[in-house]
Amino acid sequence: MPRRKRDPYVCPQCGTRTEPSKTWQLVSPFPDAKGRITITVMGSFVCPECGHRWRSVVSKIKVGGNEVEVESGKGAKAAIKSDKEKEERRGEIIEIDIDDIDEED
Image (cartoon, rainbow, N blue to C red; front, top):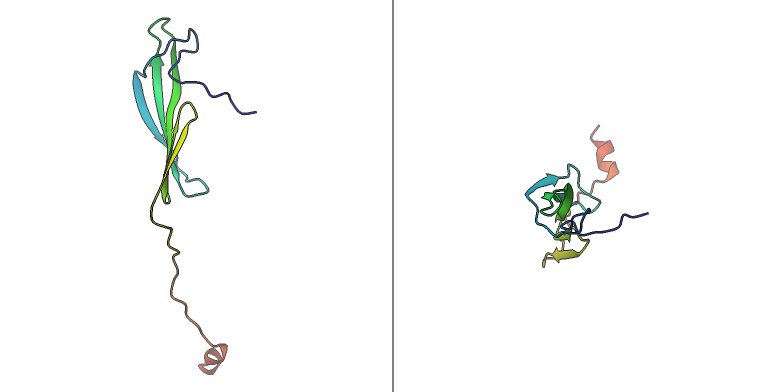
């Protein structure tokens, strides 16, 4: 069952909206199936009303291939795709006749 998306800026104890006191980035070591690297922006929060401290994902950025996808902590997504179509990379085709290989011996 998926987790419920909630606003990372709202205190889970009292519901007061606040800004992160500190942010940092985490970079995934392995790309996903589309070849994109995920950069997760984490935030440390302190509630000004009740003093509760918590950490949460502020946003996620997927970079690589021919597109960039940004996901906020609330679950909203925005994708930016490249105008260039992906060019198919092909190498040089070399044809060899099997009879030519046998004659060299």
